Image (cartoon, helix red, strand yellow):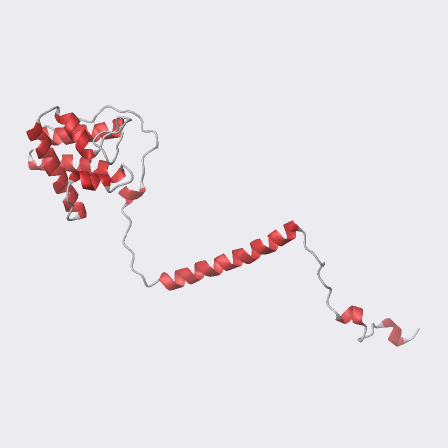
Amino acid sequence: MSHASLSPAIDDPALTTPATPPAELSLEERLALVNAAMTARLDEAAVAYEVNTAHIPTEPVDLVDVVTVPLTPTLQPPPESYPTPVAALLQRAHHRLLTGGWCSGALVDEDGARCMLGAIRAEARGDRGLEASAASVLLDAIRRKFGDVDSVPSFNDAHGSARVPLRMVDQAASLADARGL
């Protein structure tokens, strides 16, 4: 046996040519390759986004807007009523919105849900002066937080969920109580 026969020949094409992949990949293999490629591209895009937006100042998040209530609220007795009439009216309106539902685009919808002004009107029980005072305090509370707002109905209808309108009715009740109304 010669020494040359123990070592492979360098010119042997079977040893120098890389193995060729199978002519066709199965569906699972193709999906795995595409998934790996897309994951790499998404990772690169995430890094690029972080780098490209690092200089943009951000506003702190108000946790009141993030924390939500359960989709099915449990009925609870109304809290202790405010001693002043306007504050008590706004508090009752807030409770009515919590328990009866909130809507936009109408004072009362077909399911009995009410807008902010509709809840105030229902709880005022025909006392137009008390209703007007409550709506005025509510508009003041809204303007303190959101700037120039035309009216309570336009503010109500600008929202797609009850979260902010309910919070504003509750804050208006506190404001009315602080003013002794």
